[in-house]
Length: 218
Image 1 (tube, one colour):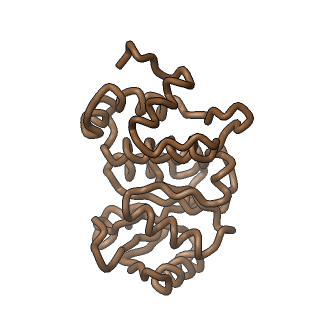
Image 2 (cartoon, rainbow, N blue to C red):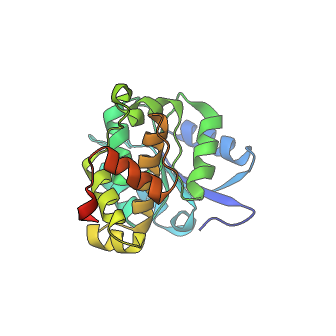
Image 3 (tube, rainbow, N blue to C red):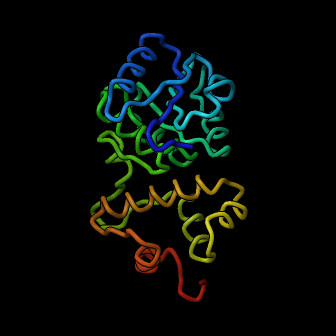
């Protein structure tokens, strides 16, 4: 969805001052990102100009009693590129958001630079890891083996057994973009544990080393 010269975003946050501040950061950044819509209800990302925005910047706490996880899941399953922007520095919630398909999770304490970078990276369909997320993604570094979620492990094994991310998505009932997001997060986790795996072959080698997959399963 992202164009060659201009990126676009829709902001979903229940605080007008936050929406105004985020819009100012995005439009004044380099590259400049056009804010096509904003509002306090996730519906703004599904209608009008917000429906075609390259990136959805989503606050999880929109005035309801629980975080907007269902809304995040719907957006990710529809192939939307979502950056979660939250007041809460909570590793468990951050990892759950990534599990659901968000491309990044930032706290509002991290400022304009990280939000701009996360938005530009998300527009290209890639994951971005800000400082607050680094520890959560790295897992237990003492063993050199990153902690993968059950869904990440499932995606990884399915990908090894097929030639297409589209096919993986069909098998697991998720979009190809969500498949790609999980694979991005897995690569980040391996890189942060000191065992980079930039290619499919390298990931396969790591998975075999860690006992996640057996050669006779492939």
